[in-house]
Length: 462
Image (cartoon, rainbow, N blue to C red; front, side, top):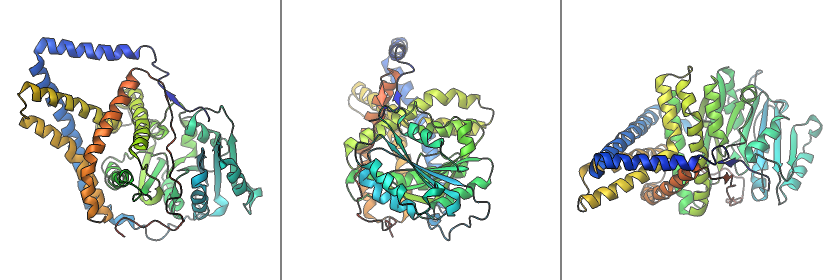
């Protein structure tokens, strides 16, 4: 297996002292003002923090409903690429992807875009299965293979950087003005390239993010919860960030980035496990903007077990928390962002800290319960209402906008135990990051071709 991005290398020695300093500061505060006063002050601080996120969630919900984000799912006719359509290079990094290659290659072959302006580069990233062999056969089957439209790269054992390294290796072969990235388990719809490419007529656009849907939501309860999470995330949260702040995130798949902008920020960062968040911030701080297109849709697999959910979301948490540590100061020093944009970017970077603070809130509540003789006071009740109501509003609005069946509304109750899992994994990620513990990128396990065919997956509620 190729060497993957490893976190924890930059602060391996001094980080434990940071944790000890935080604990020492907390003990000093407790000694100075008393336990009850300290708990009250910390509880108030958490309330204000949760209130800020609640207002943010509520604003996104109102915008998505008023703007008709659900209605915009119907894409309409293909955009006309015109004579000025940018040349595109489609990149996919593949590591042991034999189980999903049939679906991926068929979907790539169905993409609609002027053939003379389209290049495919697929990277076999030191696979131990038949991924490399299958990709070579695919490239050899190109009727126009002498034009170099299908390129397969093989990364040997010992190659570094994981997905970022594979994409950087492909970048040297790119001929397109715009790079489009899909993950190997994705199935882009035929019109995706046309919809992503049109945004690059604006020279200020550095990247464009499309909308990802879950194609195996009926495979397990966890997969169905992830499916609902994606509805809320893409139809409400990402849509709202675009509508309110013009600050959507580059998501790492079903996305496009201007090749010149990518070179200007030195490609993908091979020292992070969330290259998408890292690239979002570097593009934003360089003066480029990310756009979001709700009609540019592709479908992907959801994790189907709690164990896989933990592995995937722990990786997201470690990488996102790393981005917070590395970019928070640069965001506030930036002369390119307004104060409101800096606030929103800060809240975006704190997304995977919210469950950590929720875990701290649990500790405060338990302490408060014990101290108050087992009575849960009104302040604590308000705190938890603010914490949970905002995300539940987004999730339920996502279901509404997608026209989901009514039975899915009952599934929302299972987000409460899933959030408890998120609190545990995000807190572990935060402590591990603070201690400088090394972490190697972990590939999400695939279920394979869950529907057994390339037939388009039905929209939720269709």
